[in-house]
Image (cartoon, rainbow, N blue to C red; front, side):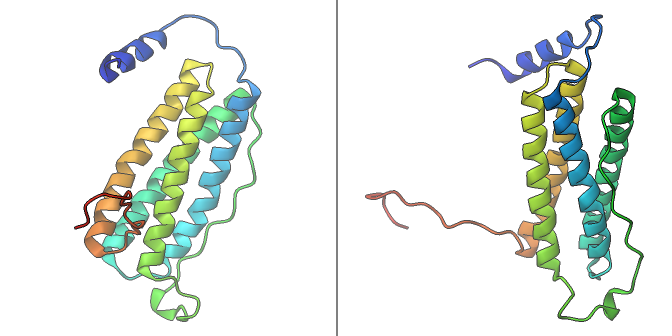
Length: 182
């Protein structure tokens, strides 16, 4: 099995080439469009989540997630405009409201909010991996690698907080037939 660090170094070396950059192929463009759309859709959901929680730790996580989503959206928007890739429509921002004024039948619980963020982060990571694997251009591949790493780091922070609070959803454990039971 190749050394992961050698593979990363070899990959980064290939980005220092002086070859002209071809137009993004359809897979690269579609990956950009889909990820841009996913980010644009999560931002209003995060803003709405801020309007329904009073938990300071969760508010901090939501704000960190919101900052990361907005940062990646801005980077991707600039890239797409420079490459001539059309942008999808972006939903309007949610106005701030008092979390204590939200009726209980509408208000998301802190656990629901944390798991929503967790699912979105996991989906983003998969999208970044898929987009990375389809890239021909190194600069686009490195953009996906950066986005992937940023989401992974945030995902670990989120998982730690969810575990501490008892919000993480754990699938049932698998015990193969004949295995000793505890």
